[in-house]
Image 1: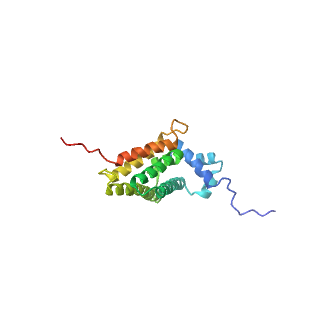
Image 2: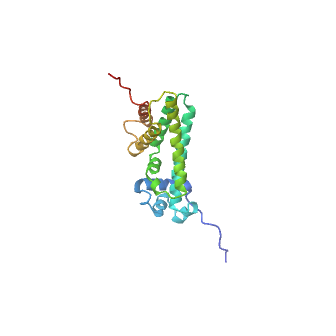
Image 3: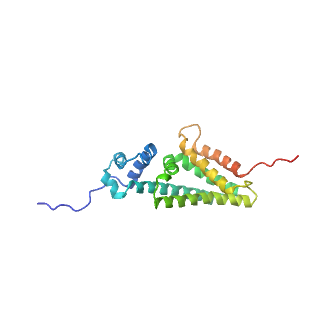
Length: 206
């Protein structure tokens, strides 16, 4: 009688296949509306195969959101490193990178914007820390611009959040193949961001 194998069954789909299926389902149905069976079906694997990689649906969401934020932080930091020394040049470069991300990776961006409420600890703590890091990058540029007199906003912290949220919202409505390319959209939003931080136009007293 042949001996019974003690090895684990072969997993047909890797982690990336599972993550892609999860992203598609979370975008269409939301986190709470998606089951592990939905993810398994679209990944063409068994539910047991998913558990080979992830102990829970919560772990899948946490990895998607953390990886998305890590990617966009790397992108905006790279843009900052390649920009000039002037805060206006730096903000222009970072906003362009921010918008490009939100127009080319809309699904992940939408999940990141809408599903933080679904995260549990410690995944939530990690994602909040990454969000704070991203906000800090924008805020540092704007605060330095204010200190140098290049920006006139009296509210640098709120301005940073306004610029971030303005860009984040693009993912909810931008359509690829529409009248504006991601690069053209990024250019427009860079102008809007600079207008936000330059502050109110002083009025002449009579």
